Image 1 (tube, rainbow, N blue to C red):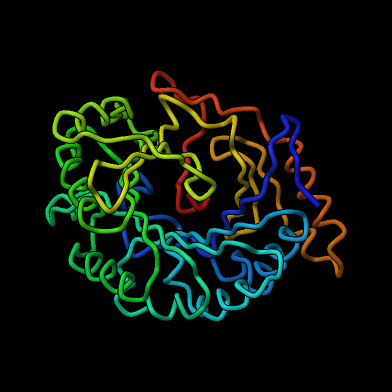
Image 2 (spheres, helix red, strand yellow; image 1 turned 60 degrees about the horizontal axis):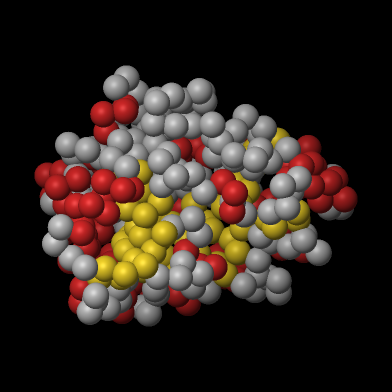
Length: 325
C-alpha cells in the first residue's frame, strides 16, 4: 500500500515529534524566553505515538525520523525507539538531536535500533555557539559526535547558515569532511519565527557554494534516497561529503515525500502549510479505521509547493520546536 498525493508524490517519510521541550534556545527556532510548556495531558503518550507510527507504516511509510524539541530529553525515549525499530515495514529509523545528551546516550541509541543521527550544530566556535543556542556548551556536542562515531552511528551535521552570524565558518565545516566520514548539510535560513529584518540573515545556497569553490574543488554526488532534499557534493580527495538544503532559493517541493506529526497530535503535510489535522479524535477510537482515513485526508490536502520566498513570508510565525523541524 502507498500514500500518493494529488501531484503523484509517494509519501513514505514521517517526522514524528515526541516533545516540544528542549535544553537549548536556538535563535531561529524559538523565542529567547522559550515556549509555554505543554502539560503532560497535552502531549501524546508513547502508546499513541507508536500507534501513529505503526498505522503510517502499514499505509506505506518506511522511514521515520524522531524529532522534538530535543527528543532525548523525554523520559522513556529509549524503550520507545526500541519498539519502533521492530516495526516490520520500517526500513529507516533516524533521529535528529542537538547532541548535548549524546555523550551518555549514543551507544544506547544504537542498541535501541536507531540507524543514523542528524546533529544540529550551527557553529564550531564556543562563543558563537553560545550566542545562537543561548545556553549549552559546544564541548558537549563535540563529545557527543565522538561518542556517536564510537557507537558506529552514521552522522549528518545540519548547519543553518546565517549571514553575519556563522557564515564565516562554512570552510571550517567543510574541513570536517576532509578526514572524517560524515556529511555536513548547509541549510538556508528560514523565517520560522518571522523576526523583523530576517531577510538580512539569508545566505543562498549558490552563495555558499561560491564561498567553498574559492578554496576547494568539488564534484556533485548522486543524492540518492537517503539524502532527502539535499544537493550533495564531495570535495575531491575527502572522506566525507557536504550538501545544500535550499527551501528558499530552490524549493524541493516537487519531490517532497514527508508528513509531520507534532507531539500534541497535530499532523501537517507541509512545514509552512495551514492544513493541520488533529489526530487525537481518531486515536480515541478502539480501531485504526478513522486514523487511516485521517492520514489519507491529510495527504489529499498536501499542497503542490509552499509559497515562501526570500522576499516575502506569508505564513503565520510558529515555533519550530512545536512542530518538529
